[in-house]
Image 1 (tube, rainbow, N blue to C red):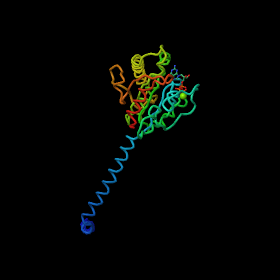
Image 2: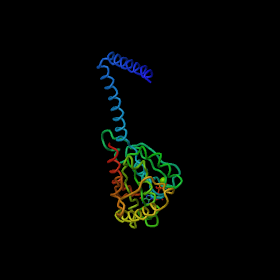
Image 3: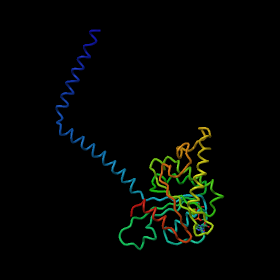
Image 4: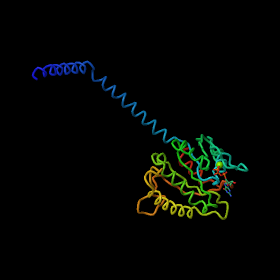
Length: 260
Ligand SMILES: Nc1nc2c(ncn2[C@@H]2O[C@H](COP(=O)(O)OP(=O)(O)OP(=O)(O)O)[C@@H](O)[C@H]2O)c(=O)[nH]1
Ligand SMILES: [Mg+2]
């Protein structure tokens, strides 16, 4: 046993000697410089990340089929409707200065607008655009609202519980469209009905077995009636008409999240 200890002691001494030599050879300024460079690159990447997040100019239009997304897209881009919109089969995508701002002087930052079709088979396209979006516009047909209340609420629930939505706290505009029609429901009515519906959905989704739960997050506060103010994301409600071009609230929301 005694004999075994010796080579280890020897090694220790050798190591200490070696380390001592090494640190003596490298003068402190070099260590400081190395640390400085390391810190600088670290900060550099953090700043790049922050800038990327705040300079995103993508606005995503989503909602059920027939809610009027494509019409709103053309209103934003051209200030007019293209007669005869049909159910979209592909996302509409473009980067442009909002039509209402084309007469303004000075440099205006263009907005990247994406219109994702509402057809259930194409909804997964939304996941491609969410990670890069600055804000989401969820379009609701305010005229045909009641028959679709459940479907609309389900789709919104799915969006508001997506990890990519919550992690980056992407703001959402609940846009009640087609207010040019006298039969259109008010945004307050739509908000209340959807809150009630989401409250019911929340109860049914949390009781299904764990294996069936597709949503990564839950909504609202347990034991309290659901309200949009409890969401992880900021939810704003506004009205619009893609048909008559009454879209000032939508444009304001876009400019609040994509700085000119
Ligand atoms: N009255 C009225 N009708 C509208 C308005 N906006 C859209 N519509 C009508 O609603 C229908 C659907 O509009 P779209 O813009 O094609 O709907 P969408 O949301 O793009 O539908 P998908 O592409 O299937 O997801 C069309 O017949 C439009 O003419 C509006 O503001 N007022
Ligand atoms: Mg469309």
